[in-house]
Amino acid sequence: TEQAEQLEQEVDEFVGKKTEKSYRLLEEMLTKLLLELDSIETGGQDSVRQARKEAVHRIQAILEKLERKGL
Image (cartoon, rainbow, N blue to C red):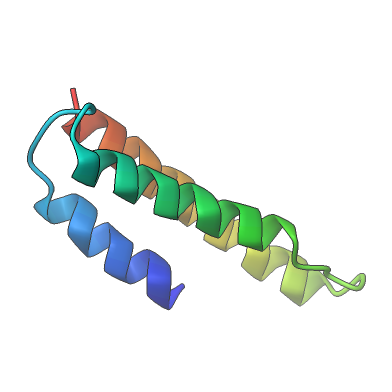
């Protein structure tokens, strides 16, 4: 979540188009975080599953914000 917070700040500061290198880099880093979350095994623990789910939703929201800014 710390990485997501840092990336969200960068998204908030982003001004530009989807074709710019900084946009693609932010998008790639956020997608990479999603992939890392996918690889986390919950071991049947609801608390781990819930934390992972919340983190995924947060990163998806950040990606959507980036997409809106990049239009």
